[in-house]
Amino acid sequence: MRVQDVGNLKSRLPLRLGKIFLLLGFVGSSSSGTSTLLHSQQSTPVFLEDFEQGLSRQWTERRLANRSTRYEVVQDGRSAVLVGRSDRSASILLRALDLVPAEAGTISWRWKIENTISGNERERERSGDDYAARLFVVFDPEGFGPNAEAICYVWAASESVGAAYPNPYFGRVGTIVVESGSQRAGEWVAEQRDLVADHWQVFGKPPETISAVAIMVDTDNTNSIATAWFDDIALTSGIGR
Image 1 (cartoon, helix red, strand yellow):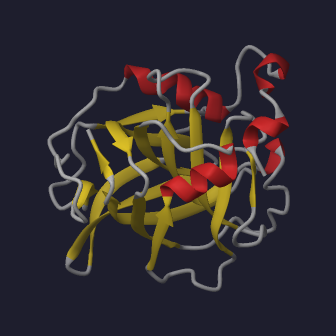
Image 2 (spheres, one colour; image 1 turned 180 degrees about the vertical axis):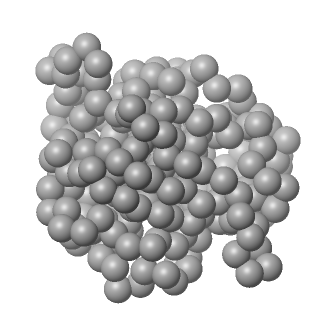
């Protein structure tokens, strides 16, 4: 599946575009911080966020619905982690970056959910475009803007692991299901994705830049409640500036 094959939905959206369009339009107003970027092509991370120093100002929250998701750093055992609590709400945490992928590059993270969004079988539709946990990587060779490409990794309620499909609000955001169902709810799950391979799968070409990473817990379309935790977000190997 290639997102561009679905077509650009911008011309068919109303003036107040969907929440993913709002995400991409708002990113440009956030400030870029590079204090944790390492100028290296080795296997060490070029970006790492473990939240041990709390939530830095380099993360910017944007509300995408009438109610905001509540994000805060808490202790989970010996680790500081980010928790997002959504109550019929939608807001996103964005971290602007300026990275150039090479022939290889990965993103890894850990996440945990309380539960998936019960009964949501419309995850490919606007009415069901909510997930207990999302992690975005934004790609845009010309900077931030409404036409930016993004991959959204999700913990789905009913879609199968490995499914890839366009976001129902914005055709240049591709969704990839990494986890699904509540069987592993309450358990920390570690993920690692090949960014270049995923970009080829979704867009049919290699990425030219990495503009941002973002975290989201949203339940505004389904009028439901969800809680998710995130930690140890890292971009590694073959990425630099």
